[in-house]
Image 1 (cartoon, rainbow, N blue to C red):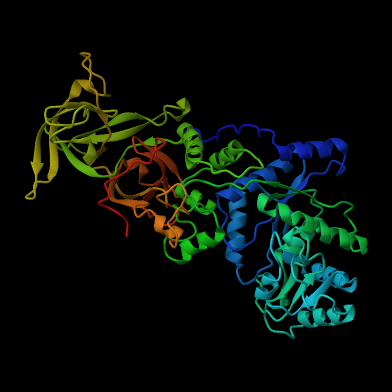
Image 2: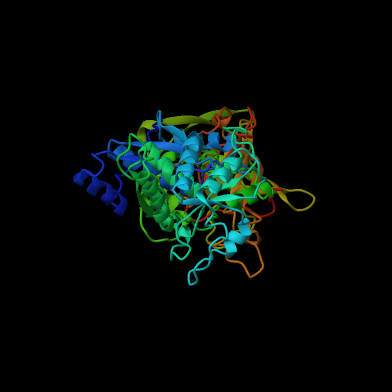
Amino acid sequence: MSSAPLNPAPPASDFIREIVAQDNASGKFAGRVITRFPPEPNGYLHIGHAKSICLNFGLAQENAGRCHLRFDDTNPAKEDQEYVDSIMEDVRWLGFDWGEHLYYASDYFQRLYDWAVLLTGAGLAYVCDLSADQISRMRGSLTQPGTPSPHRDRPVQENLDLLERMRNGEFPDGARTLRAKIDMASPNLNLRDPVMYRIAHAEHHRTGSQWCIYPMYDWAHGQSDWIEGVTHSICTLEFENHRPLYNWFVDNIAKLGGAPANVSYRPQQSEFARLNLTYTVLSKRRLLELVKGGHVNGWDDPRMPTLSAFRRRGYTPEAIGQFARSVGVTKFDSVIDVSRLENALRDDMNRRAPRRMGVLDPLKLVIDNYPEGQSEELDAINNPEDPAAGTRKIPFSRVLYIEQDDFREIPPPKYHRLAPGQEVRLRYAFFVRCTTIVKDDQGVITEVHCTYDPATRGGDSPDGRKVKGTIHWVSAAHAVQAEVRLYDHLFNKQDPNDVPEGQSYLANLNPHSLVVAADARLEPSLKEAAAGERFQFERHGYFCVDSRDSRPLRPVFNRTVSLKDTWSKMEKKKPAS
């Protein structure tokens, strides 16, 4: 079987690639292209991050440059080594490697502090005793200037002394901050004396208790790019108004003689629109709420939009990369229909996923004129889209399982599957005609009896007669019992935030986002399927062996995506608890 991914389409030109091309042509950075992917280790990466990863690493690859992986680990209260490990795994899974260029903002804590002392000594920063709420209230609005802190004009030496005492742990959390002294009347609220440091007596996952003051994201982010020699700092649109602040910090440090010795340029920041998907929330805060609130079974629950969840569900990195390329890079916020992501996966899986037969809601089918105790092997195509995939043998016997939905005692109009007196084709096998049915004491059909035509072996009739229906099946004596999980969107509405006033987005959770087929029967070739292996179950969709819960001889399969652009629905009588 061929397992080669689809050939990725070359990235379309976009305004960021045009900026890089212009910089290369002008020699602005002496031909260097150095980008970075700077996640905060306070949660798992999601599909929106995949767009940024593909853009940053892709730009570096296209221009013979390099992309750094840097963790902006400035908030120890929300960060954890678990998140660091998961982020590195996700970036590698997408096919990218940062090589020796793995960095942390915490690598620069001492240098950032030294720069803070430099700015404070030049009168460009001061220690403020206001609380966070007071600072927020005095910040002003888009139409009103801010109110200066009563501590804004503290003497330089007093500020230096207080900053050192903050560093030495003399003050409790929240007692003081260090703020840049810029312009409380600036039309850009980010320049109204932003906080650079806050006091936090918290253990850091890398530096332990070495520090009790931690840099704010805006203070650490731009300077980290500068230290690393990043040429093109690519951010999402919400950071566009932060760019003047980053430049103010870098320019003033440079004027005071504090520029890194190996860097002669300022990073150039460009902003693009973040990815938004229908039926999805991508806020880390809300994803954490879903996990902590027990609404999902962890960060890698296959209903989550995290990359670890997509991986567990069976998505391929090639499909996600193709999707990221297809949505493009723009300056305009938009919401992408999740069907585009699903179609990218179908395009990838259709060519390389081997076909198998699985019955998710089994009904016993007995072939009365087939010899008892006899079985035979039939040829089945592994993948009609890949001639090199060849064929496999599947066992056939007197007693089979078919889908409950493939039989109707009283068929509706235009029903072409099995019904009393009606003939259908068993996939890769024979024509069969229903003769009788067996019911239990409650009137539920437990068995369907039929006869088969041995002359139709392989599914074709030598006398030329046609049947309109073809159904799949498995041999009861050879079938593998399995649990199959059918996933739907986690939310009922395209916009999960569309709720009446006073209600939470959680009101739009889909109660049927997971339906479990606990007694599925699969063809025997799936007995030893390894965790992560992907298949197409004919007529059902694409499935993946669950990497967490699957066990030898008792596999668990996750439906990755249905065969069509709408989710197939099982009866709602089996919602998961």
